[in-house]
Image (cartoon, rainbow, N blue to C red; front, side, top):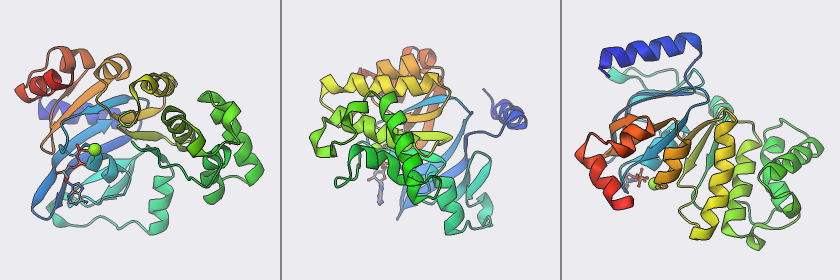
Length: 269
Ligand code: ADP
Ligand code: MG
C-alpha cells in the first residue's frame, strides 16, 4: 500500500471511529541508540495485532510507549483518540498531567512476561485491587467483578490462593483477569507465554483467544507463530526499531516479502 493510500485509509477509519491505538512517526532513543526509528501504526477497535521481531528490535519499548512507561523523543501516540507524546518538528503537544496519564493508563491493560502479581495478596484481591485503588468500585463490587473474571479465565476455585501456590499458567491467567478488571479498551501483552513451561502455554493462549473473539483490542508481542496465524487479524514484523512489513497473517507468515522477515521466521518456526 502506498503512503498516500495508507494515510487515506487511516483517515477514513478515523472518520468512523477513532483508532484504538495510533502511532505516528514515533522515535525513541536511549543515548545514541535508536530503539524506535519512525513507527507508524494504526490499530482499529477490536483488532488483534501480533507484533513479531527479533530480540532487541524494540517490541517491548513500543508497548511501553503506548502505555506511558516510556516517552517518545519524536512523534505521537494516541489511544482511543487521545494524544500522548510530542509532535514532529519539535513543537510540544500539551503535556498531560499526571492525573490525565493515570486516567489513560487505566484504559490500557498490560500483561507482562513474568505475571507481576502482588505476592502478598490473594488471587481475588490481585484482581480486585485496581478497581478499588482507582476509585471505580467499592471493595464489595470489585470482589464480585473479580469473581466473574476469575471464572472467565477458569480459576474460580483459586480465589483464596496466593500467587506462589499457582502454576505459571495459572498466574498468567490471573494477570489477564487483573488486566480486565479495569475494563480496558486495549490490552497489551508482552510475550505472555515466554516464561511458561511448554505444557502451560496452551491454557494461556486459550484465554487470550477468548478475548480476541470477544472484540477486545489486543496488541500481542509473541513468538507463537501458530497462535498469531490463528488469532491475529494482522501481523506486524519489527526489526531494528522499524516496521519491516505488516499485513494479514497468511501474507506475512506464509509469503513474507522481506528477507529479514524470512530469516526471522526460519529461526522461530
Ligand atoms: P525487544 O522487546 O524487541 O527485545 P526492547 O524494546 O526491549 O526489544 O529493546 C530494544 C533495544 O533497546 C535493546 O537494544 C535494549 O537493550 C534497548 N533498551 C531498552 N530499554 C532500555 C533502557 N531503559 N535503557 C537503555 N536501553 C534500553
Ligand atoms: Mg521484549
